[in-house]
Amino acid sequence: MKHTIAIVDDHILIANALSGIISNFNEFEVLYVCESGKDLQKKLKIKPAPEIVLLDVNMPVMDGFETAKWLKETHSDILVLALSMKEDDHSLIRMIRNGAKGYILKNIYPDELLNAFNKILENGYYFPDWAAKKVYASIGNNTVDADLKSGLSEREIEFLKYTCTEMTYKEIAKKMYCSPRTIDNYRDSLFDKLNIKTRVGLAVYAIRNGYCV
Image (cartoon, rainbow, N blue to C red):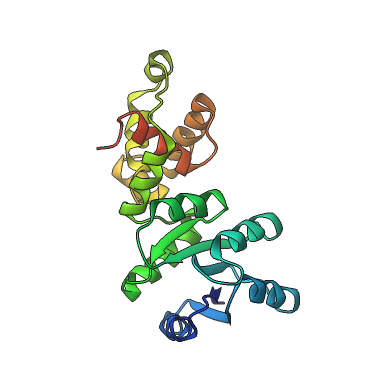
């Protein structure tokens, strides 16, 4: 069974081109194309909800910011992958705060789009390197006190470094020569020690405290 996608973009030619590209991805299909957030709202009332909404940021009727926020409040299970024309710090951070789980540019190649779909389904989020750096920088420079940092084991710190990469937990386990269950233990321990609930949070912590190289 294929994973499902809805495209929301007021530029019909671009939307149809994206639909055509996605039709060539074996494991994905486009359920429908929408011209605005309002159009998406109407379709979700009468048609199945997609797993992923590929959402244009700038639209004249109901833009990507408003649409992402509405989806977060009403369809939190849908993964929102924002689509933009340019690297805009303000738009990136605002979309993330409104619930977007990923952010890509319209000038990417099809293989990167496919990778974004796979990663957002696998990890729950997808941000290319340029976007990740901007997200981390926007959070601030506050660090955790030395006592808390000293309470982390060497293996936990090693695991933290890998959370900044695109590797899956299974790939990290292979890299660290341990079992996936052990990786889960490191993750859960860090969740408890740092009061963090997601891998993104761990990656942000690692960046802010100098653990990522």
